[in-house]
Image (cartoon, rainbow, N blue to C red):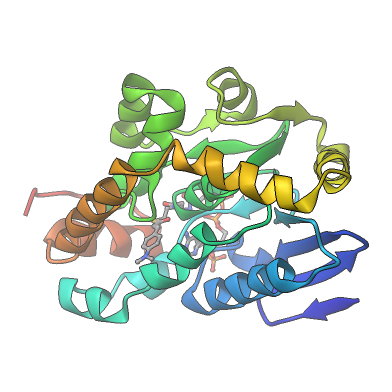
Length: 259
Ligand code: DAK
């Protein structure tokens, strides 16, 4: 069974629920509409008793190049707070079944955060992970400062978040951000392989194991996310956010003033 929405495709492969981001013209930029469709598809597989593991993927060139900058560029602090888009992202945290991210190409900004919201990450050799928000005058807003720091440690997270420079799949593997790096031709198959292995286990044990592992990250993660959100919202009052996003859309270097 294959379901095609405007921005995603989802199909059931026996016990695996496969969701593909499908906005290739903008490197799978995560628009609000795409996120709504994506989360609805994941939740449907989470409810489906036949499905044991969910795989989330993009295409060879891009897992996702981040939130949709065009959509975000006109936002101010109040408008972006009122839209409460984080509510959609939070729903991914409540998914009970394991989610395997199969990442090739760009996993940047919200794309990197989306991969980190999954439970296992299989990367192709061409994958690159990064938090480049600093280049457009903002900071990671969907958990990047918290999740990346917990996985790779303070100094590497600082370097990635403050310089905006991405890392290769191999570096990500060395840092423990990625489970496995494989040639681009087989990254999706490698994700299926691990999904099939997990699908053989007791679904109840898998569910409780996932819940318990995530507990190790919780507690102050919630506080951290609230803190990060406050700062993220605040930046939408700045001239630098407007300039950074405008410069990206106009394909020119940004000129930041610190205001
Ligand atoms: N948004 C919108 N369009 C994008 C995009 C993005 N993030 N990334 C790429 N595109 C578009 C480009 O504008 C271009 O469109 P056209 O010019 O063809 O119309 C098309 O995709 C192809 O991109 P390029 O021509 O730039 O392709 P290149 O191969 O030259 O470069 C690149 C690839 C990935 C290096 C480059 O596209 C790039 O730097 N992209 C932006 C990466 C980035 O800064 N990502 C972080 C965005 S901020 C939130 C949740 C999450 C977030 C925020 C809020 N809430 C719940 C409130 C997350 C924020 C972010 O992710």
